[in-house]
Amino acid sequence: MAAMIIFPAIDIYEGKVVRLLKGDYNKMTIYSENVVDKACEIEAAGGEWLHLVDLEGAKEGNTPNFTYVEEICKKTGLKVEIGGGIRTEATIEKYINAGVNRIILGTKAATDKEFLNKMTDKYREKIAVGIDVKDEKVAIKGWLEVTDKTIFDFVTELKEIGIKNIIVTDIAKDGAMSGINVSFYEKLSKFTDMDITASGGVTTLDDLIRLKNTGIYGAILGKAMYTGNVDLREALKI
Image (cartoon, rainbow, N blue to C red):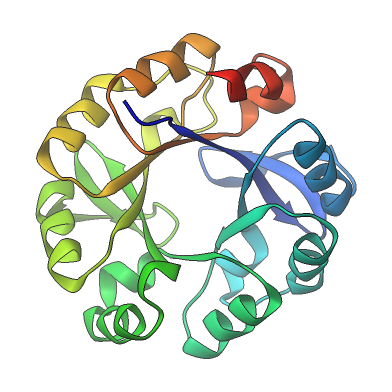
C-alpha cells in the first residue's frame, strides 16, 4: 500500500492561523499570529506538503493573503496547495508563478464546467477540485447551498474532464473533533481511482490509521494538530 500523504492545514485570515467551526466566520479561533512562522514549524516537524485555505479569499473572491503565501513558498521547501475563492485564471497564474504546486478550485469547479475544462487542459495536474459533501450531496458557496448532485456523479464528471486530484470535505465532521466518516471515504475510493484527500474530522492518530487502511491518497490534518490531539511528527510516521 502506498504511503498516505499528511497535509497539515493552515487556514489564513489576515495573515493569522485560524480555524472556523463548521465554516462559521463568527466561530473563529486564532492559533497563531504569524502564518509564515507556522509553515516553518510544520516543515521543521518533517512536513512535506502544506494545505492552505485563504478564508478571506473564499469570502471575497480575491487574494488578500497572497504576500504570506508567496513568502511561505520562498522561505520553505514545502509543496503548497491552496484553495479559497480562486475564480479566475489570473489568480491561478499568480499563485503558480509564486511557487504554489496545486490550485484547489471549489464552487467555481462545481458551477462553471467550461472554466474547469479550460484550466485543466492548460495547467493539468496543478488543478485539483475541492468537494464539500453533505449526506453524499455536493455543497457549494461555503456550504450554504446543497445541490441535487451526488458526489459520485460529480466525481465521474471530473474524471472525464481530466481531474486527477480531489479534496473531499465531510461538512458534518469538519472542525467538530468528532472523528472521521471512514466508511464514506472507503466507498468513494472503491468508486474511483482518483487521488482522494480526506478533509474534516481527523481527531486522533487512530483516525489517520483507519484512513490509511482505506488506501486513499491523503488526509488533511487541521484542528487536531492545533489542539494537541494529534502530534504532527507522530502523524507523519504513519
